[in-house]
Length: 227
Image 1 (spheres, helix red, strand yellow):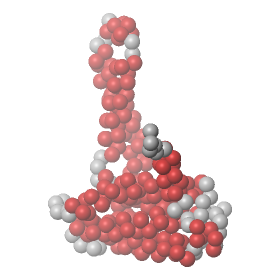
Image 2 (cartoon, helix red, strand yellow; image 1 turned 180 degrees about the horizontal axis):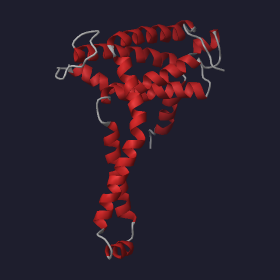
Image 3 (cartoon, one colour; image 1 turned 45 degrees about the vertical axis):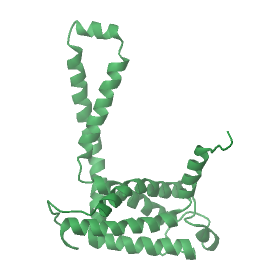
Image 4 (tube, rainbow, N blue to C red; image 1 turned 60 degrees about the vertical axis):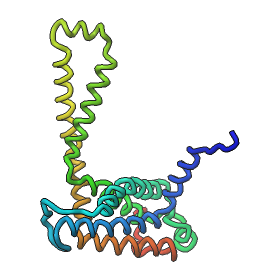
């Protein structure tokens, strides 16, 4: 072939860049939090109102941006986790001017805000129930495909195999729902709290100030490191 691209190298290079660009991810997080302000103000009917309106009209732009945040949230969490685990500074300027190591507060904050960004467009969905149904369905399909016909015939002599699949489906659904409901509830609560307009405004200001300070001047407005 005259032209050949190593797509894996491009993808790996992109994720390496994301892991080394915590400052830029902070700025992007701030920009996404701005859309929370518009979305939640429209949804709640005012800037400070806590109660959510049952029926509201949302612009296409805000709807698209909210779901785009689901994807961006993954990259933001990745940036925070990689910079924390691999001890990567949030920017080249920060590395040269302040510290060649990670800024732990920035990394942890990115993980939290990334999780909130991921759950924001789906925080009102019954995620535990949906996940339980998906896992149970996949389990039943795998069992149906892998169990040999001889075993099915043997079981059929005592009970209809379809009833066994129904029982397995029900058990797996309940177990998965119970197992994930608590943890998903925590993440959804974080997303709801951070997206409340007054708090979202604080998040916007902090992300933009901290992000530009790290990226342009190589300093952190909150420089606490854990170790």
